[in-house]
Image (tube, rainbow over all chains, first blue to last red):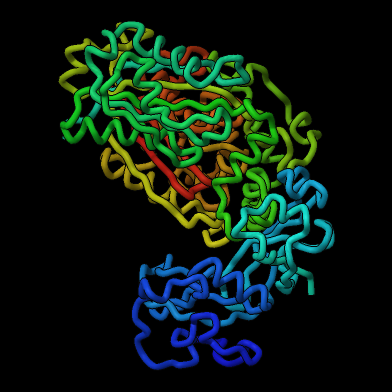
Length: 177
Length: 394
């Protein structure tokens, strides 16, 4: 069901460590069932703490709808495209291309020091799209530019504006390839 | 079906004001009830559209404004949906009257956006974006729409100069609207020479930060007849019925939506047309959510006024537009762009413009023969939530 089975698996990570053990598409064992209340711990990639914990380890986890193949970043308990609640977890490729972009002349106070910011919507190889900063000037990229998702810790300034539970969540930044 | 009637409208002028939200509401209430009995005699419920408590550090606007209207003990609540809160309040009022549960319900909206300056508004509006991936990337409201604009310019023949024409047209309309934030016309050069806020959008592509409050009195057909139309501005005017309502949501994160087709608005308008038994080409005047110039183009296409890729022609005279365009006049109030955009009240300012057009009381802005209006109010960057209403002269 997935074009990414195996190829992008975590580097030696044990799936059960992130709570996604029996939900990796690699098991390919028929119905996964719906996510249960017991699964939804702070270690599960179906929750933001779990998703960002994996991202901090440089693993981009997505949900893949087993009904319609839509990829969901971050993973969530139901597919927005078809409504199915049978969602598999898989590690996704971090490369893709810019679908649209802009330059933020006056960002929010937390990011003023970095202004102007280049921000893009990127479509990853998996088909999933997400918004993020681009580590390049506006004039250095265009629609179609290839990028790779990198991960870094928050700066001291960003940490000031983060909520307590977000302080250890890393930030994703796209770098042109 | 018996269609709810609008029997009174009122607003403060949109713009920067010394008044607080409750005071602005008092202004709107006084206008709306100028020729009606006291609210306490007729009103069964009240909804208040309001975006953010961060401007005035105040929630509980349902309770507060009920009190201010002399409606203590009346059911009242705040409605939240970012910039769609006003039309959501109207939807709730219409639903309560349609169901027969209430005879008269107030749809209200208030926002004191200027309270925290530009930085305060930037921060308050950013709360409408997905916290997990969007907010943390430093994106702002103009830059969210700039992402849509850049893609639109990429996929169509439209240019930044075309976007500027939407601003010119809407400023021209606002110049004839006493409720408007901007009362002066501008030329294309002014737009094109203004600084980039988020490329390709410039300062004059953006709606202003406005204070404002609006009130719409929704009544059952029977009570409206008893009130003898109740028009506050022209006792000879006909009345206005709300004949169609549509609403729905799309993904919160913009990246996960169709970037050049506003699906939520397409669906909401389609539902409203179906309820009213009309088609897009039957709409004479439309107030759409032109928070940024590109929105008017996108929404013209989404609600069926324009073929894909030609929505940018909204600023042209109907006779000059591409084949397939309807002859609708868009944003006759000046739109969010120039009438102003007091977030939680905006959807009600839209309905007030529709009301004035349909009762022939729009003054210099009057579109001759306007019988049907569409209002499209959106919240949370484009169509994260959309409410569409069809209003008709009856």
